[in-house]
Image 1 (spheres, chains in turn red, brown):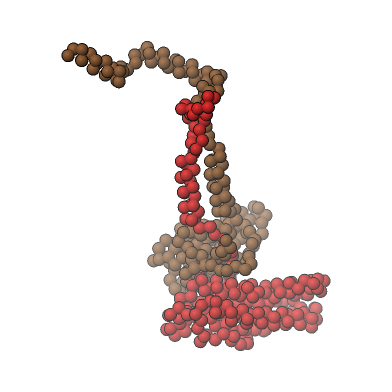
Image 2: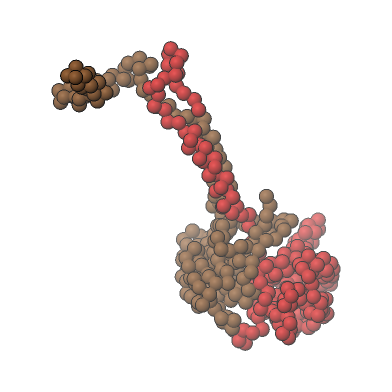
Length: 225
Length: 203
């Protein structure tokens, strides 16, 4: 590549230089090979918890209105997806079914299709929940509100411009989704549901502000586990 | 004829000279040692200085440095998954979680193997839990140990024990049942935060 030149201006035959050209050429070939073989990953984290419902509110306090959604995932033999989506309300320690927003008889070809439908429904649910929580905080006497909600109420009163606080509170405290799988007859199997389906659902729900996604044990697990 | 033999002998000795005598060798050695000892003092043109091509080396190291910077990360959340695990992919509009946690343990799984912090727990499909199992027994044992260590480390470093979490790096085709079994195992071991790692292609 370059060579030492003697005082006389001629190429020195005595040069003992370490010529890295060959090494460099080799590395230039190796580096792209290494770059392609190594997987450069940019990862994200989705939180998961195994469902454990339980009221922690004090006896004399009134908890904020709490909704929870359930989704039951399954796949047909030809790979179509079932994503039943229902809404429940948690009142006085009991779950009351409100409505079923996506029927289990409806089959989807892919998650893109579910995304379009579910996003609309989740957005309206979020808006409704926000309205209810606001009304609860405005109308319930302060001494009857549970301590955590009282703190939230005070914070909102002190910082009226912080509209994001209410969204965050609702998504963290007042709305959650229970995810499960089930088989419907022989044609639709809950066992074929995989992590990809789970993540696709969770991504849609988190996009719409539903930060709490809990896994429910499959129905074939022994009861009492 | 004898003349010819002589000329042949001369040419042989010319092309294949006799090995130097012992005395000659000693003389040569002493000369070469003198040369080497004087080389630093002598004129520049006489030196046999090795030349290191810095430009090429810098080029090479720059490329290697960029490669290492792209790959190396101290964040345990960014630890690359094993070769046989293809993480599920999401199209990320926003970063889901950027917090770095302490005491992170990683469970990697697919439908035929489970590893915990790169230590193999289950290596074949036969050893995998059956459909009705609610937890993964061999994993539970190891997770309890790692959780204890994580708790002790957190106490020593005065870190909130609630920040201890476990990340599941599972293949996108891993069954829901196995994911639930692993999540349940983590909960049984004491972990309060369980997350699943996904790929968020950004570049």
